Image (tube, rainbow, N blue to C red):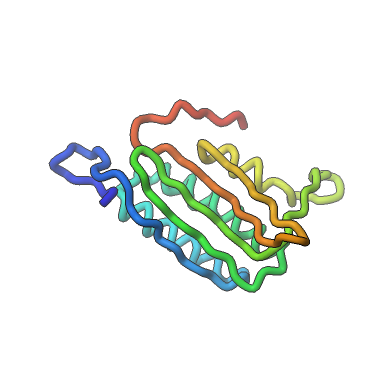
Length: 153
């Protein structure tokens, strides 16, 4: 079931689980519920605290974008563990606004995607458009054998 078995000395057992999907209201008050969902899934799968923290922050960044920038009524977070990685999707109902942040104008805004890239092994974004709304951010974090990914910060 993707959980740690003490008899296996901390190694992840089982390979694939069905995705766990949760839908959230696209409102700032839902962000704490998202973080709790990611922590619960991390704990259920026996991930260490550093992995959990990385996933919580990366997913939070994508969800903040869904709440603030998309005009969506709801967004969905999907969690799937498949040894040796976890895949998380954040799906909204909006249009992706691609722009390069300008710190002098945007202040601290515009750092979400670089933060996501630094915390997980893969980030892909399928951009929602006006003719086909619904942006999907996909995260992959290797959790079995040590990842070869190192982020440049």
